[in-house]
Amino acid sequence: MAGGNTRSNSPTFADKPIPYDIPEFKDIASERRHRKQRLAAAFRIFGKFGFSEGVAGHITVRDPEHDACFWVNPFGLPFSHISVSDLLLVNHTGQVIQGDYAVNQAAFAIHSELHMARPDVVAAAHSHSLHGKAWSSLGRLLDPITQDSCVFHGDHVLFDDYTGVVNDPEEGKRIAYTLGDKSAAILRNHGLLTVGGSVDAATWLFVTMERSCQAQLLAEAAGTPVLMDEETAAATHRQVAGNFASWFSAQPLFDQILREQPDLVN
Image (cartoon, rainbow, N blue to C red; front, top):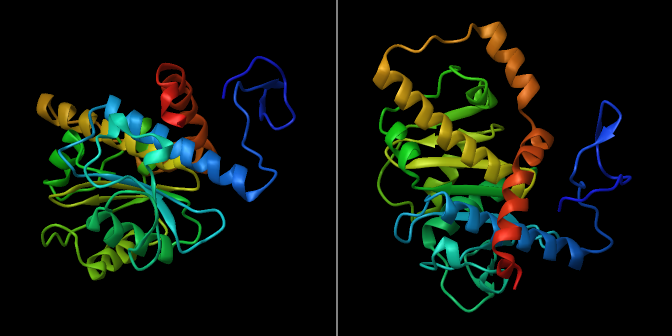
């Protein structure tokens, strides 16, 4: 959360602290509570941005104690209504260990394989957002046409093997294999997928990837965008990408949603 005083775990720029603390935890319980609160906040952010499409879409966060388990949204509950108490804990076989509702089988099929394949991934986000799914139908990667799109320069892939709704863990394995060590994937004819070292990072990457898709769709509708050269795009990526940069970029969104909708922590 934002605050006004200098703190030891606040990074500094030009000898001044940023207004957000890097989370530190005294025990597993407090880390789990933090992750669940950020996950609920992420769903409220997705709801606010209109990323829902019926019952499609899911965000997961790995449990800090049980690596093979993750927290996820209940199947069919509106993003804009999700609170901490609604979240489900699901194991690697798809069994709901904690929670009152059913789990989306597509969420299990995709996210279970991602979390198993990428121990560095704490959270993953996927939805059928409007501009993301429109861009995905083109079967192309994003081009370096803006500073923001350079977040994904050399760090996203195209999953070019759509076969219908993802209910089979084998397709989840193929998505995880295609993603490799990258931060995002464009799932052709489907939508976007982002991963990160925190819920905050994965959420921000999804938001800015959706907007980058929108920006390129608008630019190409108006004319022919001027692409950055490889050297400039690569240099810009190094400046704006990474887990800390994504976490930091997400803080205003999380700060705002927690102020506007404090009930999400219940």
